[in-house]
Amino acid sequence: MLSKSPESAESDLKFNSHQDPIVFLGCTHYSFRADLFVEAFAELGFPRVTLLDPVPASALSMAQDQFCSEGTDGIRIEFISPYRLPDVEQKTIATLLDQISPITAEAFRNGRVMPELAD
Image 1: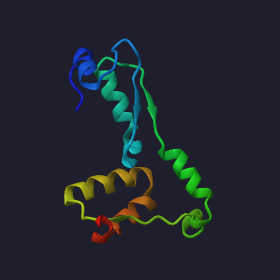
Image 2 (image 1 turned 180 degrees about the vertical axis):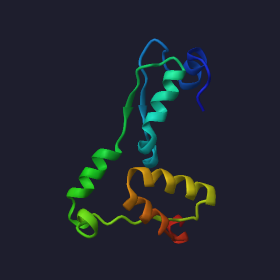
Image 3 (image 1 turned 90 degrees about the vertical axis):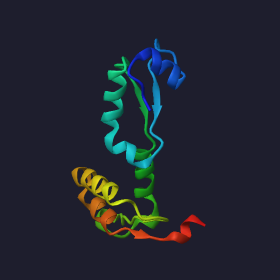
């Protein structure tokens, strides 16, 4: 959780408040709201932040892979999870995805739960 001042952010996040932070977006859905990370760091007194986001490169790599040859534009999207997401999270994520990629949002809404993935 980010604090309210650069000084406390420095101690909370273990970086020097005189240097521009480098932030790794380590979860796949963070890319969709990267702007919020930039805004949050700006509010903490860090107007310049470098975001390291592996999602675009991963998506390009997958698009070039032979296994992605089905579906719209050569890519088939399917969501599979070991557990069911709470209703509020499902609605929030689907709404966010609708703004960015309606095809992805539809795949998310039609996702499958496979508890055996957690084993």
